[in-house]
Length: 350
Ligand SMILES: Cc1ncc(COP(=O)(O)O)c(C=O)c1O
Image (tube, rainbow, N blue to C red; front, side):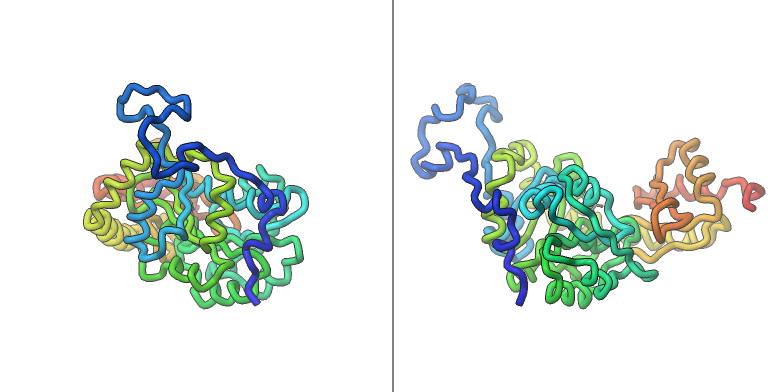
């Protein structure tokens, strides 16, 4: 028996009467708007944005081939993560399971919301151990975050493991697909129609190149979306973001071409990095970054900063010993990185 999301929702949220705008209550009767204390003089942005972002969701629904009622949008996925904590976890009572090494915001959001974190390390292939996860659950366990492709390791989580978790985990399984457009055939998004306990998160920040507009996507059971709509700030996606999203979502070929280019460049960068004496391992990646083990990670990190190249130091993260995480840049940027690493003073290596 799969858990029913509506039974897992915090009682306070289930009973909440949400903020409601007159414009929304009387939709279809619009003419003169004297209801929201806006400025009447039209400069393109004097009105509040659509609180449910129907046009953007309609477009996402066409692209993902999932009904529009299954979408909720957030001010970045980071807002979606926070909303999930607020929807499901009673502070100082409930708990969530995280699978380190993984994206840092899950833990930050848990801490902000005063929710206990139970960590179950990934195995040495960066895959989850289902039995260990289940052994850490109790009746207060509400969420499990599975990041696939995982940040910072770059690999996909095996779909049969996620399916097993969907069958056996007692709470909601949140699959963060921030990097899924780099391997779209592996998305689990359509499975929300079969599994009420599955939440899939996606974002326009990566393959779509829109990190600056802040648009995160939650795809889930339609009843859950209704509840989450009650707790999101009414106008969480501003008009500029909605407009820009629609413009970029109209042009799928450009996004796909960028993805192809980045994937080709990732292969090139991986090959070149493997030839460098300062590199001891390049982990395989399904995303737009590489987790690379260096002989002297801290020294290389500081050396690159001196060359004005910033990468992410993950060398102190569990299972990522001696690793730096490197985003695939433009061909020029990748070239600059490689040149810098080729010139790293070898005599310094122990
Ligand atoms: C796994 C993962 N999820 C979510 C995000 C954040 O996405 P957004 O920009 O939509 O908040 C990131 C950003 O690096 C990420 O790596």
